[in-house]
Image (cartoon, rainbow, N blue to C red; front, top):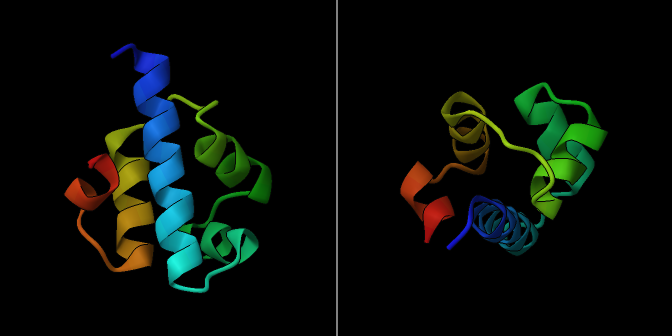
Length: 70
């Protein structure tokens, strides 16, 4: 798997979990203290984010980081 494919898969996982929890993208962005455009890029797989960023998202979704990597 390439880095781009991994980022896209993680982005899809974030979007899926967020939707399952009924959280709007703008609300998740606010919970993570991100701009909506940043969250949009992450979910689209267009941002090479840090582990810290991934941790903020996982905490906001009340899940473990591993759940985003599946």
